[in-house]
Every structure is written in structure tokens, then in C-alpha cells.
Image 1 (cartoon, rainbow, N blue to C red):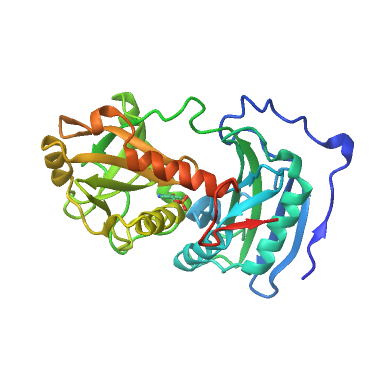
Image 2 (cartoon, rainbow, N blue to C red):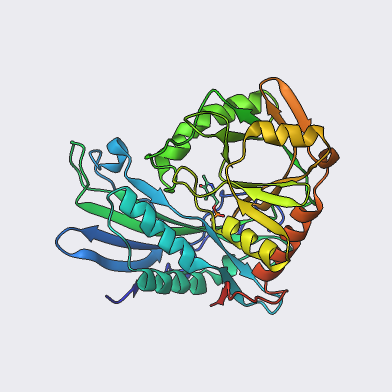
Length: 355
Ligand SMILES: *Cc1c(COP(=O)(O)O)cnc(C)c1O
């Protein structure tokens, strides 16, 4: 299965956006990787071609029944100008877990990795060089078979698009305020919370909009059964440092197994700090804040890497984390992860892959 390369003519290449005003997810690069699937042929016709619209039948099953999964990772430019990827295999393996849960076909990881690297070499100029910026990579799979009726589709499209993104914190950390909802839930036991599937995000929007209206940046989800145990935040996993213990909820099926989460767990262990994966009640978090023991709260995810939380709101009560300032651990993790991702610090776990 050879990957075809259809380079866009030079005259049709886009003008690059201003490197200092990239924002997030607004400017797509020149090319994309596309591969088709059907039951008879399996994955076939992988191609790298000019970024363009798809033609989809209005009966394409993704538009009706939502078989759609995606991933998110980044390419970074190191001080020598080489391109680096952070644990990319973990993303494609997670995509295959999502695919299995959604009754979609798994992707051939080696071939897709080769396609991604070809795509990045072709669009290398799209990887920004300024501090904290990177190229965001969005692998996606959708059901394309035109048919009505709920069942696994027989045809799919896999594609990878990329877009340059600016530094998440151009002026340094700005701890966010979080709204803890007990009105909505994100995922139920036995549901699809552990899959990066489109419907999870559609279902989360109303809670996010209401939280933003009330002056909060993000929603913290509680478990769907008792609505007491912390699960995760928006598109991030969550960590708490209470006294000398670092706590994050365990992967019990209703939260997304973040690659940043896993990397953070490893770094904390490397540093000899006490870290546990256990259920944690929102009441425990508020009680710790009351006793002055809540030293750090932060989210972890590819987009922001580490997102410090300065305040939480739950059932009419507010609590402040570390006086609203970025905790020491959040800062240390951010500096170390970014250092590894940009090839500026040693990479003892072999997380970084150069192109
Ligand atoms: C993608 C995602 C995360 C973070 O995963 P990373 O691999 O660290 O980027 C956490 N929670 C949700 C719901 C997500 O979609």
C-alpha cells in the first residue's frame, strides 16, 4: 500500500498566517493525508494531497449516527530547526481503542505514522518556530457509507489535517476558574467516555456555555452515578496536590486516558513525589482548600499541556487554589514537559520522535 503524493502546485499554496496571531485551529496547512476503507478492500488508496473539501453523500452515516473519532497531537520545532513529535504512537493506539469502542475499523499504525511524517515533511514550513508555538495535528475517522439505519458502516474515511497554533500562554500562566457541574454529566459507566468520539464533545457544549455565562472558563465533571467524584475537565484530565500527595482520578472507563496525564504521572514518579490514582470526592477538594492544604490543581492535555486552576465553584461555594496563583508543581511540570517536547531537555523515556 504505497502512499501517493499529489503535491499542490506552488501557485496554489496558501499564504502563511502571521506567526504572532495564530490563535488555535483557524489556519489549516496546505496538504492533508487521506485514506479510504471499505469492508471488501480494507484500508486503501492512501494519498497526501492538497487540503480541500470532501464530497459526502447526504446519507453518509456519520452525519446521522455519529461514528466519528479523532486525535490531537503536536509537532514542535527544536532549537536546530528539526521537527519533533511527542509520543505519536500513543495517539494512534488510542485512536484504535476509540475505533474498537465505536465499531469502526482500526488503522494500520505504522502506515499512518509514515503518512503523517510525509505530510509533515511536505508542510514543514507550517511548523512555527516562535516560542511556545507548534503545529497541531488532527487525525480523524468518519463513517461515509450512504445508508440510513443504525449499524456499523461499511465505508470510512481517515484523514489527517494540521494547523499552526500559537503559544497557549503568551504572557505566562493565567490560572483558570472552573465551574463544577452537578447538573450535567459527561460520561456514564459502560458509555463512551474513554473514547475520543465526536458525540462526547457535542454533549458537553451546553454545560460549557452555561459555565462561561457565569464567568468560568471550563467545566469540571463529576461521576454520573453519585455526582460526587471528580472525573475530568473539558478536554483535560485533572490533578490535585493536597499536602504532599498528588491525586488524579483512575481510568475506570468514563474518563479519557490522556497521554499528557500519563506523562505527568511518570514525571512525578521520577521526581520521587507521592502520586496516587484514586477516586476523589469534590467535598474532599473543598475541605482541603479550607484547611489550606490545596496547593495545586491543574488540568493536563495536549493543547495547553498544563492548565493551572486558580479557583473552583461548586453548589454556590467558591474555593481558591494556592491563593489563585500557579502552583509550584504545575509550573515545574509545564517547564519540564515543554522542555522535552521542544528538544531542549533530556528525554529519558524516549517520548520524542524526530522526523
Ligand atoms: C484529548 C482529551 C484529553 C487529554 O488527552 P491528551 O492525550 O493528554 O491530549 C483529556 N480529556 C478529554 C475529554 C480529551 O478529549
